[in-house]
Length: 129
Ligand SMILES: [Zn+2]
Image (cartoon, rainbow, N blue to C red):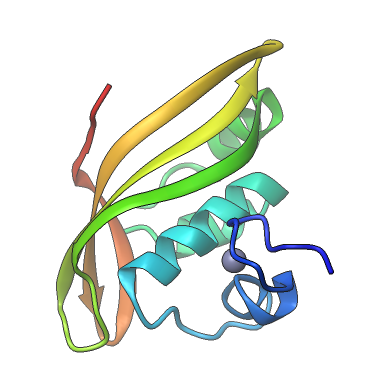
């Protein structure tokens, strides 16, 4: 059985695919970041736009996704972001290949919940290294 791109030992359809393909709402900030990572890894730019508080330009996203190949996600720490919370932060490291070189994105991402939906808040997020 293939793991989900987000790294959990679950099939894509039962993991991030529920949110990306079927429109189910991610119940926690961690579920959202995992599904956003899987969307980046599989080129689902619409989902990235849909789950952002400040939606990026979709053409820019497609260009970015063409340049970068994500291959692993590690969730390092989280604060809040649970089913009863309205905000939360998740620290993660994502590994990718760009121009044939290995690279890492280490970020503390901020999330807010609006009308029951978790959204990525880029303005409150910061890159760690
Ligand atoms: Zn997943």
